[in-house]
Length: 261
Image (cartoon, rainbow, N blue to C red; front, side, top):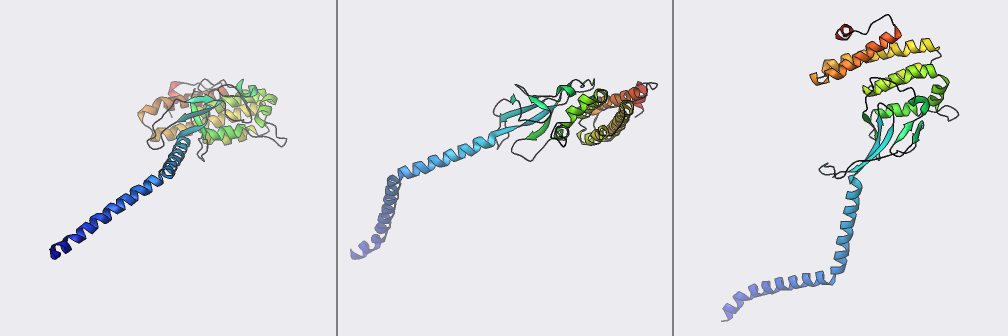
C-alpha cells in the first residue's frame, strides 16, 4: 500500500500544481481586467487612428487646357490599395498666378485670355501629392508660372499684360506642350520669353522652337510606342506642321508633310 501511494503521489502533485497555476492566472486576469480592457481599447484606438490617417490620399492636379488647378482628396485601403470613397475636389492652397474659386483655382485673366490652342486636351495631370516628396511632371509648369520678380510680383502675369502679342503666341504653345506631356521641355521655351525680342522675332523664335521640340519628341515616341499611340503622335505632328505654317505662311500643312516624319 505504501508503495502504491508513493507511485501516484507525483501525478497528483503535478495535477494540483497545474490547477493552482490556472487558478492563479485566472485570478490575475480577473483582478486586472479593467487595466487589460483599457490597454486593448487604447491599442485599438491608436491602430484605428493611424489606419484612418494612412487611408487619406490628396494632392493637386493641373488641367492642360485651362491651366486650372484643383485639389483632390479620397480614401483608400493602404494594404490593398482599394479606393474606399469617391473623389472630392476643391480649391488648392494659394498658388502665385492663380485665384481660388469654389472647385479649383483659375489662372490669371492675362494668361487665360491667351489659351486658344486647338490641340490642347482637357486632361488633368498630377502636380503633387500632399505629405509626400512625390511630384508630377505638371509641377514644372506650375513652378514656372509661379515665379516672382525682385519686387515679389508675379512675373508672367505682368509680362502677359505688358506684351499681349507675345502672350498670344506663347501661351497656346504652353498649352500644347502640357497636353503632349512635354513638361520637361517647358523651361527652354520660357527662357525664349525672357529674351529681348520684338513681337515678330519672338513669334518666329517660339514657333520654330516648338516645331523642333515636338517633332523630336514625336519621333522619339514613335520609336518606342505601340500602334495605340499613333493617333496621339499624329496630332503632335499636326501641331508641329501648324507651327511651321504660322511661322512661314508660304509653307502648307499637308498630310504628306506629316507622313514624311
